[in-house]
Image (cartoon, rainbow, N blue to C red):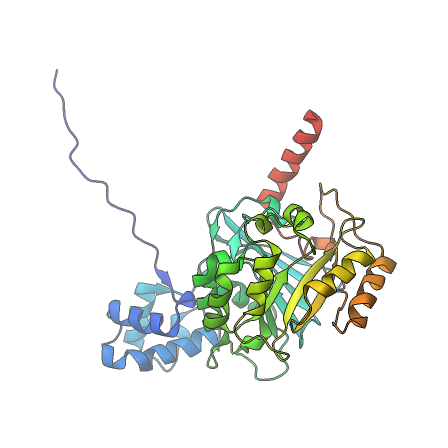
Length: 384
């Protein structure tokens, strides 16, 4: 009996080319040097050229970079990619809200929403993670387990997909349809701060998409230790997903509160870099019927945020399949807002947008996970 050993080695699969979309200016310059596209002394100039084609003109083909030599374009195409992610589904609400289900890699799906007539002209709600670890009980996204953080390229790609659909290339100076970015989609941005900060640097660059940092808002459920870094690294506007005025209730609604209770959170907010009357923090407060919507809660909220330059966004609860929460009655919400207004805090009531396509606040979730979670909740109810 003979035995033959196979000593051949499997050829490793070639690594995917780097997508230049997610590189900062310095990262792009270094990538061009490392790939041998140009010598170090010309890299800054070449990076500026490529940058404008990617982020100002929105091109996805190196061949379109007309002021770059053909030989250099060939080297770029060999080493890198500008490909957009796959759009699995595009939905448009009766109110004009647009939602895209985007697949950035096998098994990696995120949802991104464009809401017209919000902010200066229209706001894009972007995701920072696939799924979420926070398990906020009123939030549909919170029922999807965390898969992974998104890269800066995957975050910026959401902006590019929206601008493609809105036909907003090259980047306009005026009359933008997409004027604001809000990190209020899937995930907790402060658990992915490195990639979020890089994405904000790219989105706000004056020679690219050129959105002012004052029109970029990052919403957090309260990862207190990361608040100083968020302010120092991004200078973004801060929003806090609050929803309760005492620890007992917030522990239930926002379980992260057990780790960073309200006294720590409020101290962190008061120390947020750049906080002023011109750069107010936004407190997000979802209105849950019979849970957090009483006049007593409104007065407690006034006391909690006293002295902080702030406004309060009151968010009518947006239902999703399987939830036990209900939206507060409109009269109750208006009474709550009146108490805040009387105390001197602007408290707009957010008009629900995109509910018919599950694109409203707290409703985002990748489609495959919606199906699985729905089946799981049904099985749990049947077993009870």
